[in-house]
Image (cartoon, rainbow, N blue to C red; front, top):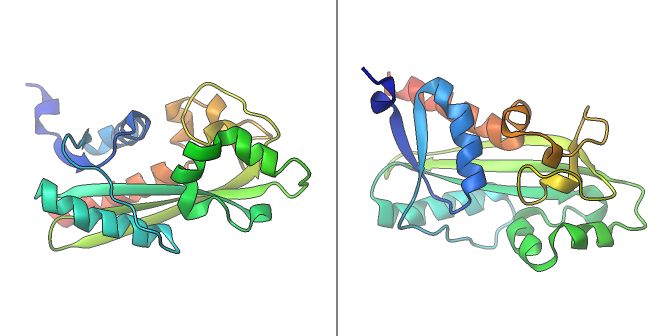
Length: 194
């Protein structure tokens, strides 16, 4: 008998295959599979924190999906840039990319930064959001071929300048903001179903 047929499937509203791959690598030990939405697009609002962005998007996506779903919103917060790009991380990446962030920090000695993830579950009744962070720093050049987005310029604490872009999924899932949020969700979800 194939146990995979008994896996719990939950819609993750994203078109980012990297996020799906990271989430599923971690979730398989919980017998949960995240499936990419074929119909919904994540509607983003301007807000002061990622939780507000993800919760609004979850309520909006539910109108189309009509079933339990997750919305994940992550941001890179750079101390010397007053938290920029923060809640505007996706838009900033589309406009200036990693090269733009490095250019803004050319003369900056303070490289402190953190990634934050807000993961919101909504099933039409229950809204539950999991927020996790990983601290680190912005390195001086892009390094690595793994991951996506800002991964090649962010080095988590304790990695001695090695970027997320140099770490394969399993290694990144050991410490990342996103993996912490998905793990917290999986534990909560399975506990709720008991």
